[in-house]
Image (cartoon, rainbow, N blue to C red; front, side, top):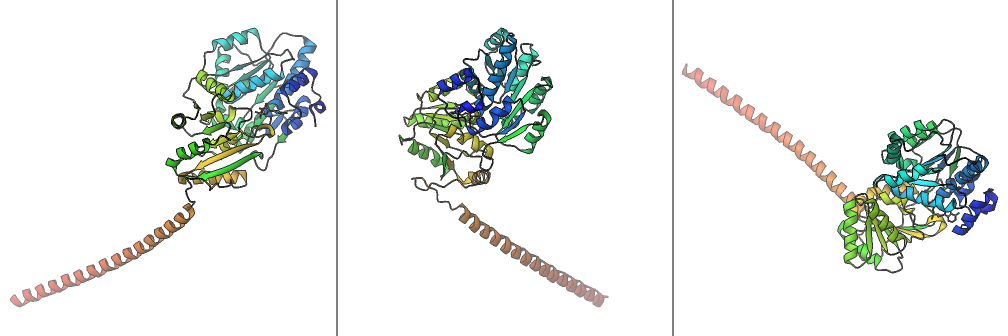
Length: 437
Ligand code: AMP
């Protein structure tokens, strides 16, 4: 299928051609016609599937057609709510590229930076606003934004929004939207809370699900290394010495961890930068743009980056630490293998993280293959040691129990002996007393 079949307007075709997109991705094939028919959508789509264009193209088309007919001035008609600043920026970039010939204006707002530039842009009028929840509410309260004319509302990465504790903010924002609107709801996973939320805000939605069985992107080659915690550094350096790793996004669980790994890599003469929540927005953007332009080969990130980052042709994702949530694994590895390109996702798993690996394997249906051929291989003897320690524990418990029984029996015997001795001595004493009397 080509984009021609999707009945998109000329300004969009022109932009897509320039961008080099030839065929719509699966989610685009499914979602674009449904959105153009003005239906609500409940979309379950993994990262890297081309989800942004799946909603951005029809939104631009609908607003362009209406604007063209009415020739009215810029009114905020579409709101895209997204969890992270990086993702917000990326969606904005996509709207700018796809909407280049539509005359529609989009803007992005997010926290962590001064609001002045953002409010200046808003004052001039925008058609489409991409926002993170906190800054949006802030600017609504200051009367810079009104949601009364919203016709198209997108809730992106809904599961992530909930994970990040945005539920109260989201409900507040939704309560400010006009009842009559079209809502596009996207989530990578569909746990019960998400289904409940979707039921409250969607009207007869069309359900769209891309690769529902195995959420991990199929084009990504996955592998796991069993390695001790202290040897992870050496394994990472060992792998990155291989020049076939063109670019690598390395995930750590903590901000401190990200800084430490970056330092270790730089000391080993491997160009790396860190991106995490303690860095200023400018530093985050700079690190990201250096990585995207391939000036730095390695970007070390906490999960803040696992959703937002879209690096063209990112070859490797390395989970230096296993994620706590198995769903996060999908989002992390989804940074590579985007839009049908191949990619590699490698994970370092120490003994304490084996339970996390177990739940990831369960989620993706197929166990991640174990890579044993490396100098730091920690033989996977955890099961062996577990069963032998179990046995030892059982043995100790049993013998302990025996001891206890023995002890109790001995104590009883001892008491019995003492009691009889006591009775005997009392009897003797009484006898003697009797004799004296
Ligand atoms: P997304 O899932 O929206 O973050 O998109 C993932 C990547 O796929 C981005 O780099 C997009 O630019 C790219 N992309 C989206 N749609 C297409 C398409 N139809 N053909 C080629 N690349 C695409």
